[in-house]
Length: 199
View 1 (cartoon, rainbow, N blue to C red):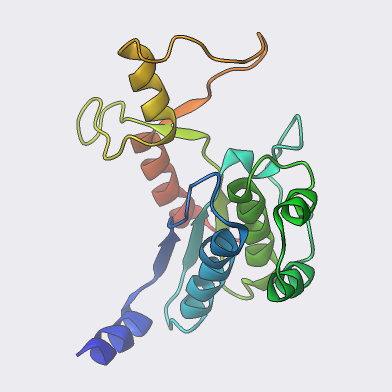
View 2: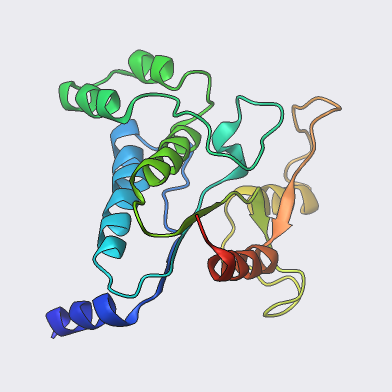
């Protein structure tokens, strides 16, 4: 039964949205690589087998290039060679080696999202592909209803603990801002991006 379903998807699917990722900032490096980079490669390879593919939409993060003050709409060079990272994973890395490999990026999430962007740029072939980089996704502004959210991770957890008075102090600097984007804005953006994708 499943084989029939897969065969049907290879002929009927025209747009692939790859939104899945592990978003844990402290995820062990090997696990983050497997989900965020290798997982992206697996979805991209599946997309290449689809007969009517029109767009591959990858949802990354605005923070994948956190080492830059200004982020333009380009794919920046990878923070490390994917082949080198694979070799290092095979021999095993300790925490100090992982920290060095992150090249100044604060966590495995951001590092692996940057690598995944490069994986897509280098391997999408004839499939039109687009990369979306939202900032911190928050509750909806309008759709499906005002304030809708399906989790309490990241920014939502922070704002909730502040509102309840559980968190009264944030270590920051005056020029930092909390950059939130409503989930319905992101959802609408990825639909429009797929419709206009030509890369």
